[in-house]
Image 1 (cartoon, rainbow, N blue to C red):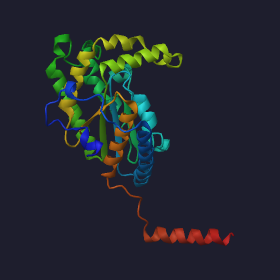
Image 2 (image 1 turned 120 degrees about the vertical axis):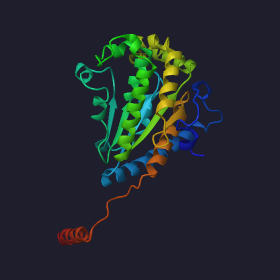
Image 3 (image 1 turned 180 degrees about the vertical axis):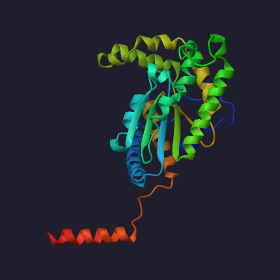
Image 4 (image 1 turned 90 degrees about the horizontal axis):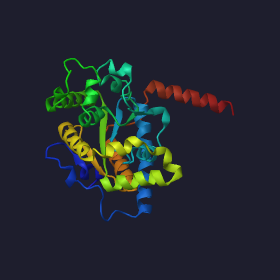
Length: 292
């Protein structure tokens, strides 16, 4: 069984994140994992070359996780062999005043990858059904039509947003965008250890934010928000991949393997040369050889 099947979730069964592993026993040795990651990076570079040259499909990678789950290092390692010319990483922070003046998917659509490109969302439009669910007061600050009281930010409100997101992803898929959604599933204890590391190691101090500790107090609320959001937006066409992430190297190997497997499903190939183009190439070759 490949990782693409092992960690696949399409919403058909009830989801309980407490029953989903954050760590896997009997994983390969770290050296084996690193070697597999190197091989996957090479394969990904080859696939990206065909994707870019063909200019017909796009790939969108969505990474969601709680703080310290390893999103940044995941992107840095797994995408290390990618040609930057055909790749864009977008990190969605708190919306600006300009962005709040538009619909919540407006800023997202501007960064959907063009044909031939790979787009990476380090956090995404899912923040609007995760953070805002834990802190519904954020919705009131968005000045939405018809939403003036906190009790209006209820389950029905978020169900409509889940519909928006599902329609949006289906729309992108119909337009040739392969969407791969990863939830890096980390245990509360592992997050505690990583926060300690950020504090105790001077070279990691810059990573620490007081907001991390504040948000940790809402751990159970975030787990519930993720469980609902994943359940409501997972489909066979646009599933979620629930990646055990207490071991960063293992999670990197899994994600890279899934990306390679799913991109192989696309009918990618280098553009075929027409007879006229072949004649041009032959003429150019003869011209250059004469210069010798």
